[in-house]
Structure formats: structure tokens, C-alpha cells
Length: 222
Image 1: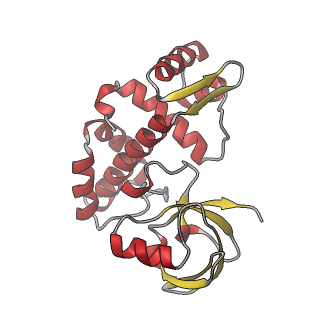
Image 2: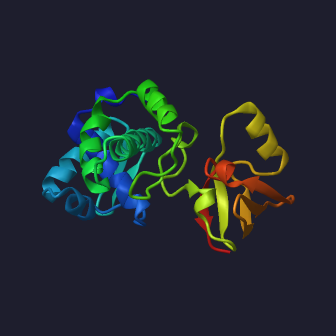
């Protein structure tokens, strides 16, 4: 996914839409809501949304609003990954306050590449949340829904649908053997200091908190 083809302004529209979805808004998002989030006039949003629709990043429905096309969703999550990794670096290594770190990271995200973000993530110990507690999308979860969250963030009793699992062959084979595959509905039955008890349609299994933080799920109501 090449974000270099988009201007910083175009990227910010995708990020703003992603953040609205993360905060609970449903697609399609009204253009007035997007305009308010960006602090711009609705006419400007209308023009930009139409441009991003023509480029294949968004889908626009008149009088209803905008939703992500698959390419736009993947790119938005990638940009959020870059920003939140930099926010961790600026807070943990340079001592910036979380809010200020996020502001600075907003500039750094535009000059970051996937290869650089992978090195940065490794240097930081592969963090799963930024200093403000927001999930850092993993490389495996870039194409998963924007309302997906790490399994480790759920409370006992919660139900969810698996959206993405780690790509490492051994880990993936283990999870598949336990029925924890994308699309599977799961129930978090219990939580300990170092592990979670998760029930799939096949069985119950204990998984570590570390592994649970790498499994992205969509919370559901049962």
C-alpha cells in the first residue's frame, strides 16, 4: 500500500475517518461529522471525499456519507500504526507528554515507510498500545475492520469474532488447531495474571496475555 501517492491532507482525511470509526461511529459517516472532526467546512470535505472516492480509497453515498473502500481502510490503519509507534518512541525515549507526542507523531507518520515502522516496532519491543491507550495496528491486522481490538483488551464474559491472527507459521498453526481462526466467534470465559481462557465453537483453550494481544477481534453482542 503506497501512501506516498497521497498528499498529507488526503492522508489526514483517511485517518480522521478511521478515528471516528474507532470511537464508535458507524459507516457511512456523514460528511458533516467528518468536517467537524477535521475542523473544516463541509464543502471542502465533499470535494476531498469525492476525490478519494475516485482514487479508490473511499465510497461515497449522497445524503448518507462516506465509508472506506478496502484500500483506504488498509492505508488508514497503516498510517495509524506509524503515528502510534512514534508516539511511544517520543514518550518512552524522549520524555514527551502523551498528547504532545501524538501531535509530533502526526508529522512523522507522513515520512515513515513500512520497513522503518517494523524496525521502530522491534526497537520498542513491539508495543500494542500507544501512550494514550489506543491500539497500535499490527502488520497482520492492517486489512481487518477498524473496530477490531486486541483480544487481551476484552473483559471476562465478553463475546467477539476473530478478525486477524499472527502470521508466524507456528503460532498460526497452533491457533488454527484450537479453532481460533478469522471469522470464528469466541467467548472470553476467564482471565488470570498471565493467561486468558477462551472458548471457540470447538473447545476452550488457555492462551497467554502476550499472544492474546496479537489476536484482533470484533466485539459482538450475544
